[in-house]
Image (cartoon, rainbow, N blue to C red; front, side, top):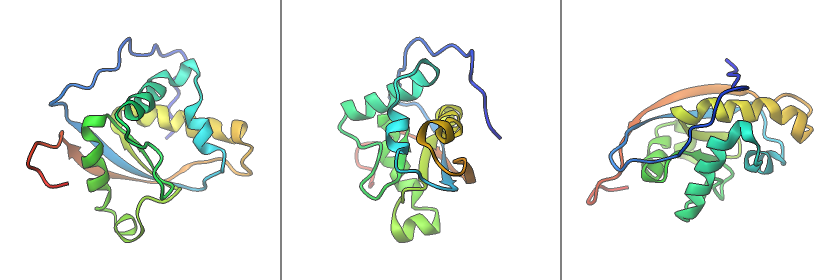
Length: 149
């Protein structure tokens, strides 16, 4: 279900409290145009919250686009758990997060969906990029010291 965020004000400050919990989802896309990576990086007002999350991940030297092609959009404090929980999906466990896979915090889902909806027009994809399947992974908390990742 597409979420329109036109006219929504961006949160004034993106903060990631240390003990915050987040609800994680795995998204499987219908296709992956080669320009999608750059499209996610766009610095436009409508997706400012997503851009700030990407910048925060980069600040902590955490790749939001993985070498295997997948994407991870969550706070740095939940990053390791997001990767770990994504392995609950049999296809991901078998071959890793591929270019059509996204792991996303529920708070960012609307922003990711809006970027995907506009990808058809900005990326020149032949078909609209859609979410083929959405799987709830569960609630992730920050990795505590001593936890095994």
